[in-house]
Image (cartoon, rainbow, N blue to C red):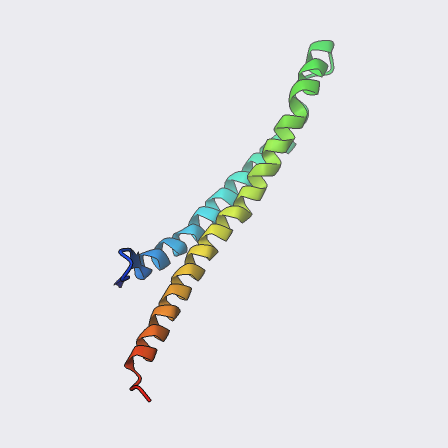
Length: 109
């Protein structure tokens, strides 16, 4: 259903709802990628060695790598939140539209 507002914009409630549902699969895929990467990195352990060059590499890159992995984990939650907001927006618009139709359908008292 596409609703055409009097202010010149369109809202495709059904399309928005359908797109919101697609986020679940994306969240699942991202979660799998994050778990697989975390498991692989944990299994590999510190791979830069214990010599001076390895320690220098670790000092420069270990913390940023850990921070990146942490952001990937947070991205899963954020992506799920976007899908939820899409669904909530579609439901809110549909509800407001239905309420407006009901009010306009009521006889003047």
